[in-house]
Length: 144
Length: 193
Picture 1 (spheres, rainbow over the protein chains, first blue to last red):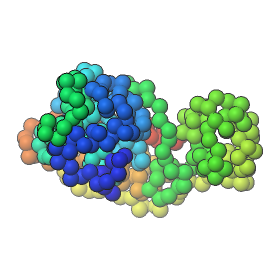
Picture 2 (cartoon, one colour):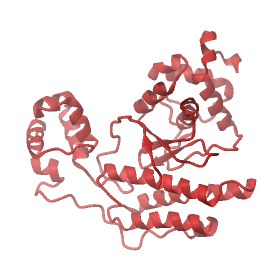
Picture 3 (tube, rainbow over the protein chains, first blue to last red):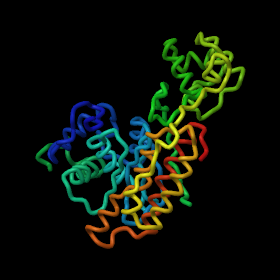
Picture 4 (spheres, one colour):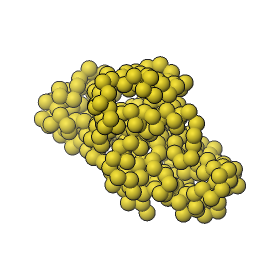
């Protein structure tokens, strides 16, 4: 099964400059993405995507991860993170969910990996949460 | 034991209502209600009106987060054109639906995890897995999935590659967390491991 994108299509091979394109297309389903997102926006988007969010105790170096149990997807966030940090990490994990989730049991641990999937997720998380967005009228591919 | 603070997010249950090998569900009142509503092309508001409850209550019924009272079952079954016995028990004769039988001896824990994981980590994960094995309603597919979740050996490879990655205690924290997620899903289906 291809990446679990609510907008359709195989997103597995997205490159970094496709982040703005993904944000624009996801904003059709999640209008919160049209402006800098905060924790409450993240929670609403997860509810709409039927992703179960839990704030849990995790090792300090583990910021968050996705777990798929049956048909349920859990997004686990480290309790030691601040609210803003949880928001960024949460959107990082959602990027994995939309782009990389093959629909089989797996989870994503995020420490030390440097592949293109991690880079994409990092850029996506910044793109949707950064307050700097208010100074940019629409994200452009060349912004990245 | 992990202390989990859950974000108050409400979801619609997405579990399929047809039980197939590998599903975590063996058939619930909620799943049958969803099936009947779909067949009758009725939405939550219409069922709520027929039962004399709030629309949100119907949503809770569908996800098995709230139990249907006998008079609710009677009213909803009549409205949707299904038998009360079927809605309540999953069986026209009023018997509880038989859980899918797991062939005896078919699931065998994968020995590679015992080789790859540190002793304490494997012991912690295996204890949880043994609790799941004791639940006859769970099929081989679910047990294999649970085993992969509990005994994720990627940390072994990462620790070996990077040196000094997760400590055993930190790794066990993640095993405990995976168990909490599994247990939560099972609780939604009325299973208490």
